Amino acid sequence: IKIAFIGCLLSVGLNLALIPELKAIGTGIAAFIVQLTVAICSVYFCVKKFSLPINYHWLMKFVFLFVVLIGINWGLSIL
Image (cartoon, rainbow, N blue to C red; front, side, top):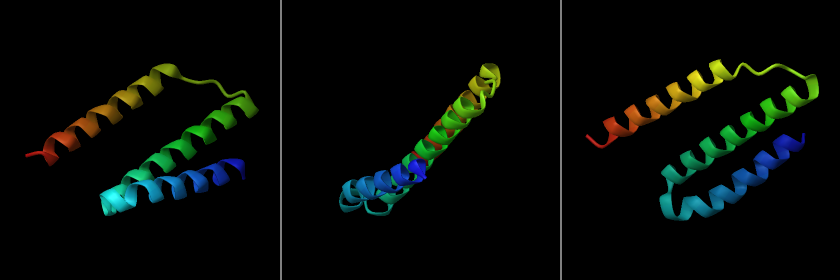
């Protein structure tokens, strides 16, 4: 419940800050940041509470793929 509450507060704050200037793009950015934050917090607390092992090799491959896909998306958007 704490993670959801933090997500709600972050969502409201980011939307108030970003929507007046960026309109729909600001909403998308805020939603992405909130979802990323909630996901990271959820994983962190699950790993901590249940003493789950972390496969750092797989995690780094996933982060690398994510960065590459973001770069491709950005590159295609400026064409």
